[in-house]
Amino acid sequence: MHASGSTSGAAGTGLDQLIVEAQAPLKTVGLDVLDSGNAQSYWLRDERHDFVISMNHGRAALAAFCRVLGRWIEHLCGVKVTVKSVPRIEEPRWAWHIGLDAQSTALLNDLWRDGEVEPARLERLLALFRLDFADAGEMRADIAGRPVYLALSMGEDKVVHMKPQNLLTNLPLRRAA
Figure 1: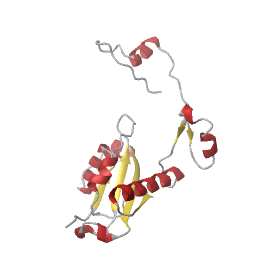
Figure 2: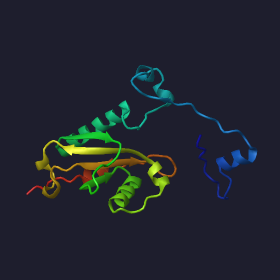
Figure 3: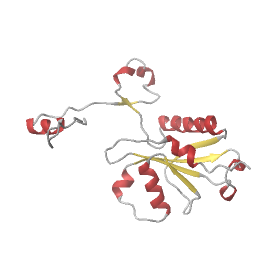
């Protein structure tokens, strides 16, 4: 459980501090991973908010997320793309990448520049994706036909702060003449 209380002016008077001082045991919350085997039961308890999805490579929820990203790009940009989950980036010098959040943008930039990345930062990486344009002519000419890599990470607070606008504003689209 994450205790989030506001402080009332003085430091150390938040809800988390009161719990520590009272030595109260922390409540644990059991969450089921939503997948094809239990998807029907979601509708019986959707208001309880006690399901999570797994962003692990190869899971059904991640594949669905990929399809949503592709459809969203098609709807808003008018270009067809395919997005798929990948376990790693195989290209040593890939052409383009987009972080779906600030953490991922910084991480991909550091990896692309061959910078050193702390293991703790890599552990916060939730998913990597490969985006391919159906028509390479829709891409910038200098990288046409090359994949675009995407990443999604959680912050140090273990919360995902996705910025979907990054995807739209940073796609390597061909400029209209």
